[in-house]
Length: 158
Ligand SMILES: [Fe+2]
Image 1 (tube, helix red, strand yellow):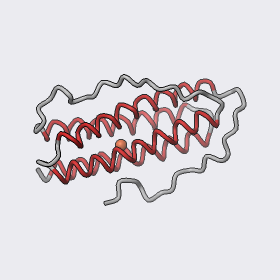
Image 2: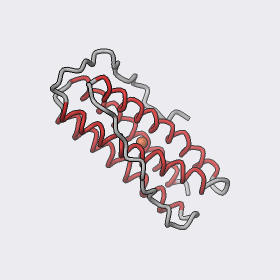
Image 3: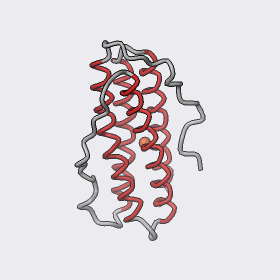
Image 4: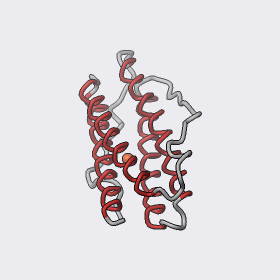
């Protein structure tokens, strides 16, 4: 199963620090911190749903790796723009206080979270002045929409 869109990610090679990216860097650090929480949340869900919901557990692991890749892209973008990719490591894992087998609730929240991420990226893409960063954020949003669709397809089959 493909958990990323077929459209290639934009190249990072055109990015150069020029001292005018402060606001963009702050926005990217915000996306990195959100990604840290998403990666940790999906990894946690991958564990608690195994083995009762093996297919969904497997899907979560695949998607968590895509989220990790998004995090990697965002961190590299920050470096290329001349910033410091600081991270907030003390992420609260959403769902940690929920029943392990509340699969409907978990998938519902994931669908909402993915769509919120897509809107967040698209909103940031419209704000940043760097066209390459904007293109990248819009590309990341496409993956989030795909993830929402995948979670929805599993939810509908429960
Ligand atoms: Fe996602």
